[in-house]
Image (cartoon, rainbow over all chains, first blue to last red; front, side, top):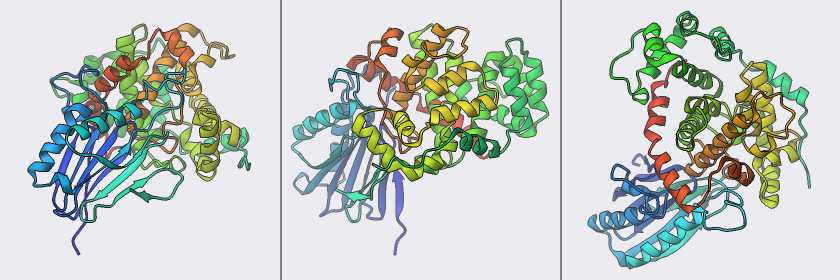
Length: 167
Length: 303
């Protein structure tokens, strides 16, 4: 049996692999969102760890890693994933994360909820690329640890105070 | 509902008494750091007598985080080049590492995570103090470091009552620290305050530890504080930095994002927390991750 390789995906990074022994992990997923793409026929996996919905709203500068912003990260993720040989029609897209503080910004408005705004932006951008999100585990007020095993495609989520689950 | 095991202050005090003692050099430095007449030479003399402390000071000031363009070889040089104020904050980083660099199981934190979280919040607090103004950025950095000190002792109790605390926090939409109070009868801020007093930490740091989750309670508090308006601003800046630290997730514990932003305190601070402020600030803060990494990496493997 081969050794399972763990590769951390920090905020702003994009990883693509066709090595079945690789598990992509995020240990501190908070308001950011992990966008996970998987072509099970060819065993190709991709992940982007996005922090913010829109680079121009965030006043991004050239020295800032583009992968931190959904509008720049997702086109790059899709491009690298397809370049590796993955096919859109065989692709499963899942998103995880987007936790937020209670009553953020007061007055019940959700315009400041970065987690929710990230999820909305990501759904729009993904659909512009002819893909759709099949499964999502977003929101809540707790951090998550995630593990995406490329060989099996299993995406495992750990949250405090509950058993691990898969989507 | 089962409200869990109520914890008495006496129980906490006895736990605090049993904590490993701070090294003599750290105790003497804390006393000196709180003295406005402290001079750099006195500080250097204490550091020099402790080989571990000396190594840590030199490693840290030679890290890229301080951006010096020459190698510092002695504590005397460090004092001369960095100046007293920066040396103070650097010494606090080392003291924080001694206090925080351990696993805190009840909050789901592995070794190093609470310290990494502390450095992250300190770096963010310094940035916010620089951009918002009115507070010495170096003070904001230092004051943020030990804000979660109480978690080290309260963790033991939080672990076994976690489900109850989580349920109270989510159901009532109150900060996790408030839910700790309702379930355990005490929270990590109160525990931290007692630890900080025992260690003779300065008044500003004690106020941050106690009020960081609800700064607007500070002006009405009975604390014998010399300059409450400045302190209120300091605590609010750290409250805001703490929220950003939680959103980014560095060294986040099981309490996660179960906290609220204190709108009254932010209004007092004059900060309009809208979409533009949140997104531009988060983008700039995550860009400081490199500084956080340099600081924590430079101290890896040391005392």
